[in-house]
Image (tube, rainbow, N blue to C red; front, side, top):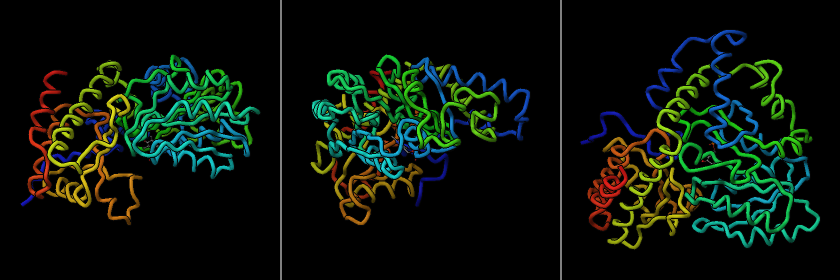
Length: 400
Ligand SMILES: *Cc1c(COP(=O)(O)O)cnc(C)c1O
């Protein structure tokens, strides 16, 4: 028998759950893209996009996903042959490095593995070694969605300043925007990349670049910034269409407006606190399960190094895949695959999974997903410690 019939829950780290309000907002016929309500509505988006990023800087929007956002950042930051220093703490840092390399940018990767945070002493040393200042920008994820490791952006900025290096700082906030505390201006970030389908609760299709005045002065006229990717006209268009270098993503824009309204209504600091509390709920359950089975564990040892929007964990192969399949087929909960922890052809691959808790997620969804996982472990005879649900409930009780 299956108990999956009912509203399914996609608990993967993006795309995230789309609120009914957002779906309803985009359910409309094509608006006039030359004059009228759409143009007025879009004017209201930019201040809110600056608010969620914590910046008074510039914003450019692209029709694209996160990979498009990476290319947009790369294109405006670098000329072909310029050098990037990329911090990798999981698959997404490595993928941004590949994106840059594929565009003809010289890439130096500082790879910290899949379970440890970036070591800022190594970053500082790499910058000090670059005596000719060939490194134009440092690229990093805020939260790497594959490993769920969070990078301490203020510590990174401090390491760059300590090295006395003029490189710009570019941060991928695709998995963290609207989930994890972030202050672009206060933390000294020059360029920030995000997309709409995670914390912004909007169907995939929009990518964003925020850039500081310093970045605007030093970048944007590179030989990689072809007319479609150049951020200048998008951020400061003469005509409305230049925001997207063509037709506006009309219905997505209405969806985004509604999602930003929801964030404003809750209050961004409260959105962050909700994500932190739900993340701690998931961690508490895993700690209890792990106490009864050494193969179970969270990927990241220290809570300070864990993102608030996604949790990567191990269950021992092949139990992670078995559990994911059970939860989806029997209970309507889809968990995330383990990404970049092992090749899909390697039996070890089936030992990893991720729980997404980003965007439109509340306590009953998170507790429900954890309870379903516990039921799955019981049904599949996966050994696990007791008390996980009580521990998770306690975190909710103490946070709410
Ligand atoms: C999801 C994600 C990406 C990739 O976004 P796509 O929309 O899949 O291209 C990049 N970086 C991070 C940190 C992400 O979470």
